[in-house]
Image (spheres, rainbow, N blue to C red):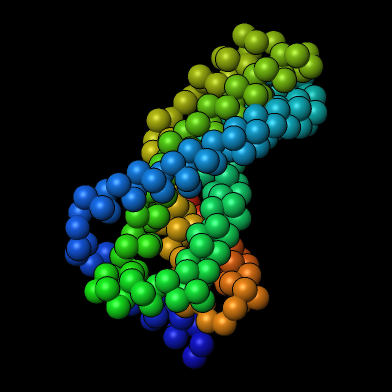
Length: 246
């Protein structure tokens, strides 16, 4: 019954989170603050991972496509589809679950054990909405931007390293990128990115919000938030792929 208890408490918390805000202007300013912290602060790690991910896919594709019957432009095609369909939305989201999720759980968990959340409640503020809603909205709004950024850099990294290592010419790689391109694949990836962003922000926030004890429990809540959000990302990756691509 414990999983059902947590599922029920999670949805009750989300109901409180998306209740009517006390003052919309304050919430708007907090959303922009969270975009800066959670989104823009993640650009660096997303850029590094995406570039090397694209480079590795290019080299591995070239290694596995040694048959003369397979054209070299298939390397660019493989990099494009791998980055757009799976690596950028799913792998980057898993990385963000570790970076952003642990930060959210630790921040809210610390506020709980130091009784700052209790102080907000005493002042008549909806602490769940004030603390969690801006994080979720900021994450859902900015995550698709990060994913598109990752797609571009991944393909660019594959192009640069593919040409520098001589495994594919620039013309064939660019031709492979454009060959058989389906714009729907980008839409599919952005839908996944938005769903994953909601999970990344809400699940660690749930664990942080219901933290009890001291610093040790804050660490445990942070770990649980990352683990459960990662599991849910993988589960919803399968579900959304079945719904949107089947």
